[in-house]
Image (cartoon, rainbow, N blue to C red; front, side, top):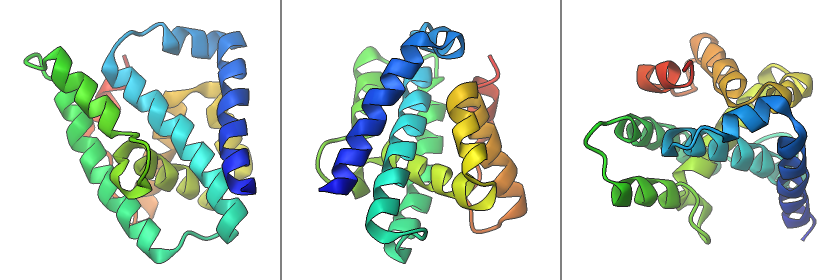
Length: 168
């Protein structure tokens, strides 16, 4: 379908952009699952935003919005766990894999949370702001969403651990 094509095209173009951007080369040099998950959230979130917009127009169906809100809470817990000094390699891989399993969108907490974040930035700040996160990186994506959570009560807040972890 056209929405799948737009989703996968975004990933391909974004990968090329990341390889040529100094900002993204620095981000991708951080070899931790915390940063990998943050990148996945932004990458999948924008790709899903594009594909859902292709399918449903400018709004998200209420059931998707509600599932995505729940996914932000799961993301908070996963990113908190990824910063634990007691984290095993196997558990880190499991958290990262569960963030974007093939198949059910609803079970992919990273992709679903990213969709809500990209949707909020796009609809409340504008497409220019969402595009700017591509140039500025993961921290900007999370910062913009965090700013929106202070203005809009319907958006679940990010944990302090996520915000602190993305400053490093």
